[in-house]
Length: 433
Image: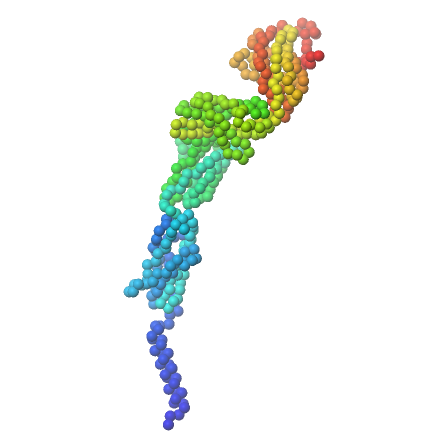
């Protein structure tokens, strides 16, 4: 008779046998995770749309069962290990939804016992439609901060440039040299090495690992810009002629222009054309294009050839706030042996001062020789040059920045005989009764 002790011992042996057999059938216990090293695509890379093999290294003491690929933290796909191979080939798929976006990815390797290891994350990978070089920067311009410091700035629509090159040359006949290199997303820089007596030219281009963009157009340290082969107009000046009239003058530096286009803007507006003149013309009257009284405008002169264009620096002009009528009937007489007396008609109710200007000879330059106050219509000049042609003109002002047009000019050839009596002495400013 078998005792209960023997029955209990036999049951234990049966249970142990079952556990041993089950362990043999399911393979050895495995707590080791696979090792994973990710090589490429690498972080900060640039790729085009397509399918890329992920270059990696994986190993496990029991073998790799499958690999999962995660794109932007989302499972993109899994790859099983074929029979008789140590690990699967793994791929990353980039389609049109990823164009012009930056992505990240990683992989997770699983061994036969489903132990998992995650690779490092490869990030900031730009996906493009193709491998083109970047577009050219545009809206290149300069801001003169001081006579020895200027700021060069530009705009750019590229999302994948690696940087920018700024090229500079000194003088009209200098040679362009690479001046500075900047990283991506740069849009301006200062030049603190300029000589105020020299003109400098600048141009900018973008680059990436696939090549360089075309250069931007040129700009200069005096604010002009355009094509290097078409010199821009210079010495642009404005002469205000009332509340709605501005005369513009410039120097023509080109030989092959077809037209000059006069461009204007006010406030935050963009430049727009207000008129055009033919080749070799260097003046324009802006009077019928919507000018308003007391308003500040910016002008530039754009020159065109058959293939290029360039533009001058900007200038600022403000129309007069009020309309001041020009004096008329200006006359000059030899009043006495040492005095030329000027008289005129006052045609304005706004003037506070009238300025008297004189030049000697037809080729002389007008200079101011005096001024009189409101409603005075006479002026005595004793600083004239005798026995030659003295030419006079006058204009009036309200004292707040508005001026009349000049009067007609008047000419006299005075003499000077010296002072003979006290009756010959007159004030240089006389009000006639």
